[in-house]
Length: 92
Length: 382
Ligand SMILES: Cc1cc2nc3c(=O)[nH]c(=O)nc-3n(C[C@H](O)[C@H](O)[C@H](O)COP(=O)(O)OP(=O)(O)OC[C@H]3O[C@@H](n4cnc5c(N)ncnc54)[C@H](O)[C@@H]3O)c2cc1C
Image (cartoon, rainbow over all chains, first blue to last red):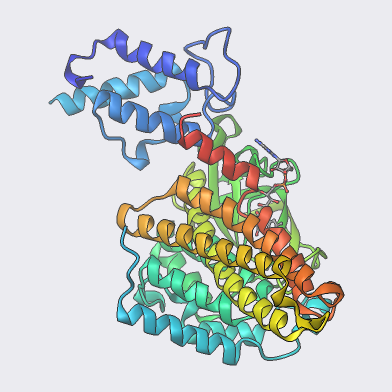
């Protein structure tokens, strides 16, 4: 996917769908946008590395190790906002 | 993949083998094993030879060797030195104490600790595992609470290799339990810090010359300057250590497997039953061939990890596969070795019995076989 043509809603949907498919725990009831992904087990330490690699490839962005923080990865909302910022920055 | 070594690497490996054979088998290993004692004399020899500093910065006493040279040196030590516990303790310190400080620590931390660790003047230990957080180590519950210019640590650690004799501890705690693995944070804690309680040596099945302690942290106050890296970086620091440790501890095992095959061949050619050397019985020779095959395949996996780490920087899946295969191969070969030596192999005054006991720990430390399979499966997209 070309990062510059990614629609804002697509970013959210792509991330959401990825998490539902790859979550380490059962999320059949869906994931609340404000649910804590880190302490619910949806994103364990391997999962963090995997989703980072996934969004880097999918949105053609580069995430610095220092940006892998609990603030950026805690919820779907926070992670989507972080990815949107990265996409916008890489489009400049 | 190119596994050809430079003439300097080959020569260095030979030099390390000679050193290990000549210097690291001194003293009464059987007695040390029985008494659960780490030899400080041999530790100092390892340091003086430069092993503890191999891949580390010259400014702190290291020699900045690449991972391939380091792995070859470790293999040579495993081949030449019979004290598996000593080598285990050494690896524990290098990859889970020195490496986090070297890669994520401040210059002041490196100056204060790394230099002394490389020189063999300080001994380091690593505390992450807890009673309720073993394989699921990122779920640890030791807390680090910021209080002005300090952190206050509270919790308890188990299985801390080198703990009873360590001067410094790299301890992992969470600064925010709700942040999961992104709350983990590493600290260097000095032994005499009030609130750090170190148990006596805990006895175990093997690797007895590598002492182990349980730790308690009770309002253990450390300055902010004791933090390694940033808050929340602990998971990354730990995973990085594990990748190094998996590659390097295994290198010792590959060397030990080579020695073991040679020793079994010697025994099988010497021991006579039914008026023949037992090596002439196919059941025995086949067993040795299987051991040789395990040694050769283990070595290839190990070199691949070292090569990938050198050329690509990371090799998480390959390190997991190598750890899984090598540890299981080592245990299987140790069992074969006991059987090849018959009843003598079972006796406590014979080193094959000790190797077998030592080997079992390899299925557990640096992540159990199940966990290595989990890492590999996830990397395969399962
Ligand atoms: C010799 C030795 C030295 C050590 N040194 C240190 C040290 O210096 N510092 C330190 O912090 N720790 C150290 N450890 C601890 C070591 O890392 C742990 O023992 C190891 O991670 C396993 O944790 P556990 O013992 O709690 O077992 P558990 O996690 O309780 O595992 C028990 C069993 O359940 C299986 N299991 C658990 N989870 C899963 C899963 N998700 N899928 C499939 N199977 C699973 C395991 O494979 C195992 O068979 C050492 C251990 C040993 C044996």
